[in-house]
Image 1 (tube, rainbow, N blue to C red):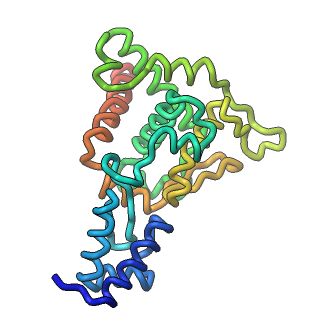
Image 2 (image 1 turned 120 degrees about the vertical axis):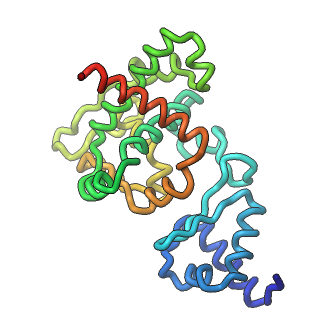
Length: 251
């Protein structure tokens, strides 16, 4: 396909706009060009491909996301530490990823649950409980299965100690408007771990109201990017295993 100079100009403008915004509504004038002009969409896809990026187009939004590997925009632990200085050591980075996975597991449900969470969100305290239960389950499984930690590439002993011993329970502030955001506390670290989702405009974190509200754009990412990913599905199965184990005990 041959492209006109006008196509290249508009596509470049859209690509760098996406690079800045990460998510652009389909109703946006620039985004509309992507949907309506095949030449522009092809150029944008090619530019994204060269940088190790992927363009996700849904009915409501355009997303520009980095591939986990082979991307000049992929984030390493060192880069994350520079941006989020509370990720002191690699085990903090690993714990932050697990926190995100537990959060995604809780909201990655059917449409009825989706609308429920869109309306009220998930409390920080509920998420803390889910994380604790998950790590407790993995720790017990690791003690029974010598290969558990190695097989699933999870440094469970380090992460478990960090969460249960090094991090203290958060206390509600005196005026009852939120809780301590110290990263040495569990709720404070949850808040820190979820910052990438906040900055990607995928969730709204209202610590003063003790709520984390997933946005519609996050469900688009789940449907179009995370579902079917080997590592995502593997971790979700591990979290699901914990839930099934709890259900069996209840019965």
